[in-house]
Length: 97
Image (tube, rainbow, N blue to C red; front, side, top):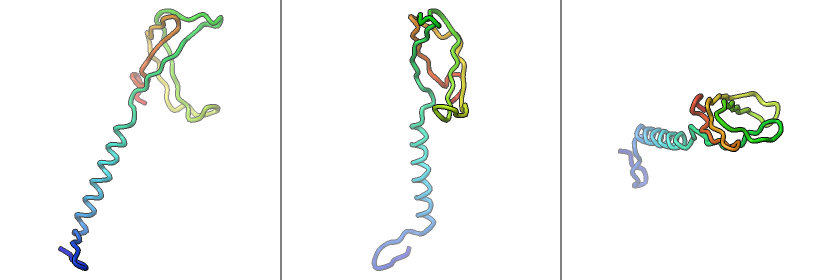
């Protein structure tokens, strides 16, 4: 035990360990907040603007920039049901995000 001016000072090793545990807990909580799946809904139409019907294979891509960016992720989901052109998928089900 160290004492200075009547105050208790914990050993340096305990302080370092407590700091390490705090950082680990904080990083675990931050990691848990990252979504592993993203729900995406859209509408698909043909060239004449007619909504598509039935099952389709849809490919989704993410890029690092809005225009001219490098592709960072891609997945194709097969047999996606389209009703009046509307679809809903979970991105990341085939290839992890």
